[in-house]
Image 1 (tube, rainbow, N blue to C red):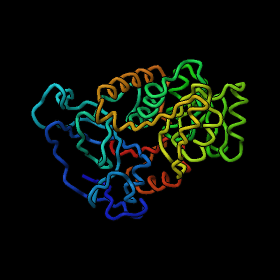
Image 2 (cartoon, rainbow, N blue to C red):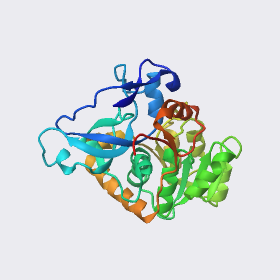
Image 3 (cartoon, helix red, strand yellow):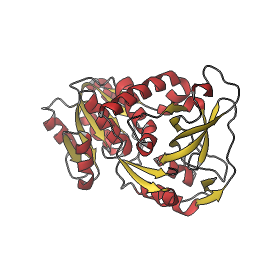
Image 4 (spheres, helix red, strand yellow):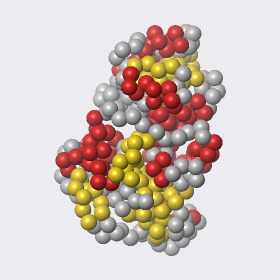
Length: 330
């Protein structure tokens, strides 16, 4: 099979090479998937650079999110293992090492693909929408009528947060990096869109909300975005810290949440995958229903398998909107 592999550490377009390697075999509790599409994520950039928290031994296959078809199951079936899948099932899953024509994944990390989404859109469902779902619904307990402020609202997880916020009945304010990205956030359902570096975020949020402030902030950016959020958070508001794409990890001054009576909540979705896969399964079922109703739809840019290194490099540049999806098979 063909697989893109990181052969040395560096920029993705410099270190990714296309190799012919044997098709892997699934072990106990695993499934072998014929890959149809791979959604790229910023961790793919970090993996190539050797900056991710997980550092596979060189050479390795990057890619952490796919859609495809089950072609084999490994080990002895049991109630919690790969026997829940049949050969030919169309599935989605998340595991490092899927930017290839076939991939082995733990059965616990695989779900049936939603019928409402094609292969490319399905590939982009798991990480972004699960992250947004757990951040908004479980951690922040977003309610209908809440004001939701979403940073990086034109990015993959940002678009997911905007769409899920609208689906929950929230009123959404999106923050984007440029005028070119503003329309993506509006199309996702944001009723107000602010451009970072041009608009006065604090004043604009207070004006849009009639002085109330943001009840929930979804923040994958951190740094200055977080600092601004603390200045326009509502009474009993909740700031969900999702990541630090802005490059600076902010310091949380504990006296400020105390004085203003708001909460700062962390979200590491992978821990749910590890510790509460039952909740991940429940969230997947709810997301599938929302996809069937048309309430959510991944915003994707599809590229061919041969262009994977350049696509990962584009992601590193920070100018993309929505998700880049690599089409692997038909």
